[in-house]
Length: 620
Image (cartoon, rainbow, N blue to C red):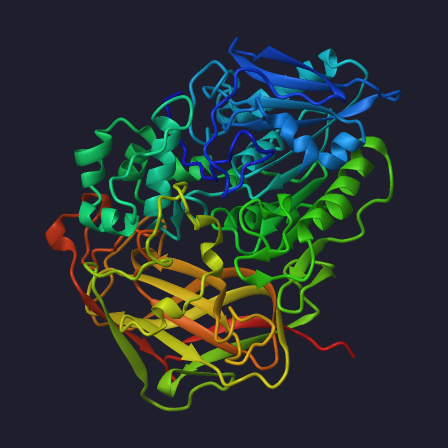
């Protein structure tokens, strides 16, 4: 098996914390596992079917009359401080007297073997192979045979990479695996998770994450010589300079980016949805509407399982969270308040009862199919399906003259707006200075809720806006941009943002008057308009239709607010700069390939650019 250093994703979660969260600091493994007075703790090296031994820390309750279920988590982030989670994200499980097992995956920290980023399920085409699925199976077999007084039931959960290892265990689950909760798990690293979105390369995250995990067996952040990484990445020049000047070909995942710019078999082989069949383990999928790393993944996993869910085993919860935010208070993101502590609510009222039912036969079977937090109105909603079907009505929000938005389709024969995008002066994706993703003072974890007024008046950003809403407008389900655009170049990126504009008078919070909050957003690389696997040159000065999935939302635009849509072509350095001239592989582009281009967004009867949302029907 070659080293398919699969793109992984995730948040460099401190090993000192219970799960991987984007705001965690980089953690190093302490000399001994942390303890909890309620538990006996031991370190073991569990042998896998190929003889490789994986470092695992096991916590067994000292006082538990009845046999206890086992909560199991597998991680690349180090397990030695896992007991800290007993007072945080796993508190409900610890209070119930569950046993725990935390494991370093192959090649990370205390485990033997070679680390392969997002290792594909190799056993599917080679019965003698090992992967994260077989390692989970072998470990569960060992746990139920070697943890005293267990009840023969195991539950798995985790966030980000740990969510992905949980999902991998579902491919061929051990019979003792009775419940799982993959949380913020990536599903496809090219289509929509950490390293690419619709083919557009997520430069800063992809570079910094790969360098950190593959420079050593521990976590070794890249040493920037500038605090504002916007300047560092811009001065870097073409992407080829990453290897020429810095990595020297030593980071396997970066080399994979370069060798596989398109959605080829390399990426298709590692996408998890390819291997998920009908759900046989009750699964609680968890996502955050403002997840800065993996919002695509958990929704894709839920959708895939739902298509084959004949036994009602597949469930979804989406809250007002960033990456892993449900393991904190969940009462706010930046200045945006949600009116309650949504994190404890999820952990105590949703997650803990879900596990208790399937691990201990306690309580009642879940009654919801999907549960979402409706930001704006700040209430939880339960749905019979996600996206909703009968409760919503599709509506188009059309681009209009004078950068207006309207529910009425344009009737004029002509109409368009234009902007010039210059790769030498890209639009920053968040307020500068843009610190290293996991560097001192970084606000990476909350950038999706930053006020978009910092780019609203740029000449290379179009901002369309509705009049003030006279009543609340609530959406639930998919959000899709349908754009008609031409370019003077031969390739392009298009970024679309659906924004809630707060009133200019907002006495509830002095930080929010006029605030522009991104509700949904996404980037699309134009070369992939016809095929993700086979890119093609964009015809110069031709009007092309683009359908851009802005994902899913549950949100209320309140009375007195306005709806805005922004369109732009750079989002730097989150997304690498598109040369805007055709080159077969952007990783091989030269400095002279990067050129300014004029992009025209049409808004006529023939070319009615718009965003489609699903408005919740009024209760009769």
